[in-house]
Amino acid sequence: MSGLQGQRILLGVSGGIAAYKAADLVRRLRERGAEVRVVMTGSAQHFVGAATFQALSGHPVRSSLWDEAAEAAMGHIELARWANRVLIAPASANTISRLAQGRADDLLSTLCLATEAPLLVAPAMNRVMWANPATQANVATLQSRGVTVLGPGRGDQACGEVGDGRMLEPLELVAALEASLLPPRLTGRRLLVSAGPTYEDIDPVRFVGNRSSGKMGFAVAAAAAAMGAEVTLVAGPVALPTPPGVRRIDVRSAQGLREAVLAALPGQDAYLGAAAVADYTPGEVREHKIKKTGETLVLELVRTPDVLAEVAAHPQRPRLVVGFAAETEDMEAYARDKLARKRLDLIAANPVGGGRGFEADDNALTVYWQDGHRDIPRAPKAVVARQLLELIADRLEGQ
Image (cartoon, rainbow, N blue to C red; front, side, top):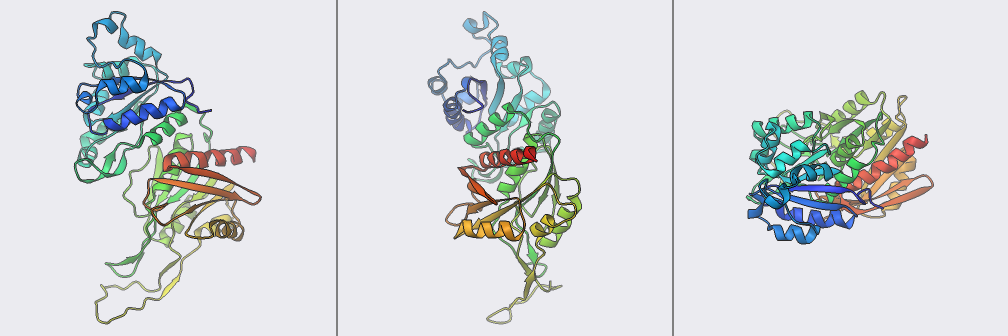
């Protein structure tokens, strides 16, 4: 049974093209047994009609403080008391600004001031608007008041640009709502997560790298923090925002990642090695750019440190050491070999290639341990991360 069964979710929809995703969000929430009521801003109605949300939610849509029928009984207060959770998705830059200022000049902002339910916002805007210092200051203000900020994601935007500012997908928001209703199972735990690729320099211009986007590791870090853990994230060279409540250490190379992980290792309850660490690095880094002088170029590569195996054998080994294995063939055989050879507690394996795994927004894992396994079906990476961490919480509680 979903943790949303019987929950009362008040969904605020503000103006932006991402409002079309909110319609699917209502459907997904109701599939999981939640009761949903929708409040729209005036701008939101320029993108999606109220009739759509009424049909999907089964309740009339509210949009005005001056609705005589509803406000005769102080309807905005009634709605504020009714909700278990208030989620604004999409949350435009304007709506975020108004919430930070504590304004109450429309129905949605008034509800947010009047409710005692936890408030969650899912930002959606152009990448430049998201990066603007005013927006970042407003987001920080909301977070300091206990508001949960979900995302934004990164990718193609309606304006034709690419960057941070996309509203998270409906299933990711559903997972976040479910997580907010669950006990924080990792409270008091310390988790160390590595994520992203490493870049091994050849010369000042070129490097050897891989296609890891870091999205899975960042999703794991975000989910762990949402579950109450103290999270340290060692991140390779990726353009992803730091998840709320996570301490981030940026690195570039395999050696840099090793040094950061070992320095952060003491006192950790679990290490999740989701980074795609290069297996080889150039034996010599040229001081100057290599010039094109021949038909071929030979590079001598040498093995990099095996960070995962080193953590598993370390005197200050965490209680759980979890590896990741991205495979193009014979996934179980390779994953189980890595599990045994590196003396890991768990290994999370996933197939890659053909649009799967790397650079994708969803994933599927099979988690192996010495005498068993568990499948985590394909879903947005935030959902997959949450399910993986539930398994890790089970293991930590059983020790």
